[in-house]
Length: 427
Image 1 (cartoon, one colour):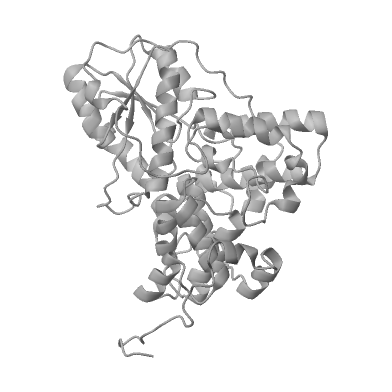
Image 2: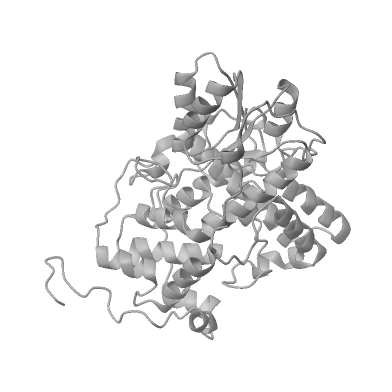
């Protein structure tokens, strides 16, 4: 049995290739469970993000059918899905991609505990490197990104694997109720989900000269080509990091290398850093004290949090960015830093509320990058330094004519941060 999670693709999918090697028959499943009732469990996702995942699953199912398979979707946990399937068809092997999330690791641990004779094969399927290829033990994880980068920057990156031509057949099993035959989620998407759309984006981006000017444009707040947008498909496993590097190298061989093409690789290394960071720090990824063990000063101001989420703070640029996020499911990297800094510094809120809100809404949500970056802003990451972005300066730099603020209605915020004091008296 192969469980798909954040690897919704057929190209460069080592778990899928291994399933072909070890199985005469195969079940391909995906488990969708959007109820939030446990500590460290993913937040309930928005309609936008849900729609993107649904489209990605549809595309994966279409590709699997061309290989003689189909995708079975369970609205339950992997353990409960395995219980159901094992009651009908004996399952000897469970194949899955390694996920850095603590809750996702817990799911695998529960399966190991319940099925002690089951062979469980796990693969690092969403990183540039396998654990065996990184030149340090995870116990001795580098104390900073700079050290991590210097260790791995010149490491050879394997060429992506081709997709299999055929897959082992499905066993005789009634699977009609687990097929992707439901109505699509009613949410308009600017970016289509799935491996097909991800590959199209890769081809289109590298057919332009955008990669050669990436470093100069990457901090823009809006538009389709100021940044690669690869994270949208990468985070859901519709494309792989190795595939991006392969296409980047082809581009550089035809158009030459420069600081901008290097910066695309540099930011993929940042992503790689956070993947292994999450594997190393485990559940500390979600703790208020982060990996430092030092609790930051913060309080819970319900009104402030609601204004931040609804884009009605006294800060127009922050409002515009939050309105963009909720409307599209996407926000630029620069925007994410700005709104995170506002929540931590101006609003003085627990950074985890912000990380959880992003988890719900970002269609390119990645557990390691999201929570790791929030820790960095809040000063509870590996360097222990809080980041504070001057909102007036950021507005002058990235929206000097306030066109972004006007477009995303950022001026419709409150004049003051609080309407009541801590004792609920009117201010």
